[in-house]
Length: 378
Image 1 (cartoon, one colour):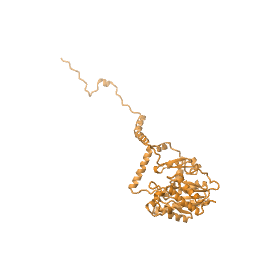
Image 2: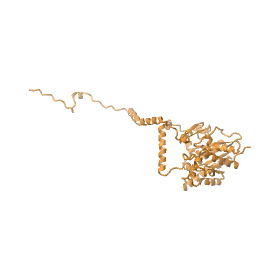
Image 3: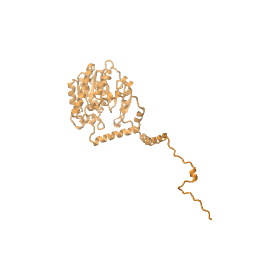
Image 4: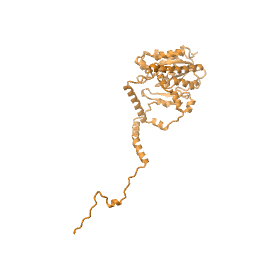
């Protein structure tokens, strides 16, 4: 009888040795390692992007660097007069064609060092306004307040000094409140308030920029926020956001008119002019109590000049000042007829350049001397 071969186990059936081996359970990754892997997948591309941008020379520090000058420290803010960080310097290099350096003195104001109160025998003029007074895109000796002092002295004025009380983004609401709470401590004998076309649009805000800054005082610096803002990736995102906004405005035919009131018309315009008059009246009354003279000057609208549009703000502001019995001088006659590119940073920007500041300052200086509002050299 032949031997019968034992049946061999099929490949689908487990062998005895296999059955004897313990089954290995799949290990679960600890949550810490999962988090690590997720972080690498998320942050890895950002690290590579940041590294690549830095190899290209980023961050360039060309975006909104003026904000580095704003003071949010409550202690130093309360001690100073201006709203900028005392004894700070910032190079504003965006756009690069208009790069300039802004230096802040120990009182928190742009300009050379000065004392809290004027020196004996010195006639002090406080210049109030927005970025056009502060001096966006011009060096210190090219700003409107500095040019005004130069023109006055050249015209025969006695010993005097001008103090730059301007700040970007301000309008009459900020300017009035700033003077009442801080600027009055400078003891000026004269205040020159410069009107810019977008002063009306800035009154649309629920609260003024000055009040908004005060609301942020003492909140403390955020390390993570500051670290984020200093990255090249953040600058890339910010530039992209700005480019996208401008592209949308252009495609919709809603390109903004910087430093202009061209887009403010009808009932809304009347409402904003009413607000302006209210704040200006308050400033006038407070200055009269202190026996401080007030003069309003008008910076012509670059957009209206460029487009050959009718100049309406100059006449309306003049009538308002006449009604409130405030001396008024307009730069429009001197600006009219001259190429916009000679007086402004056009076509790059609508702020006035050094020549524009010189022309307006000369008009204001001539007016002040003719009206006897500043002392003349003996």
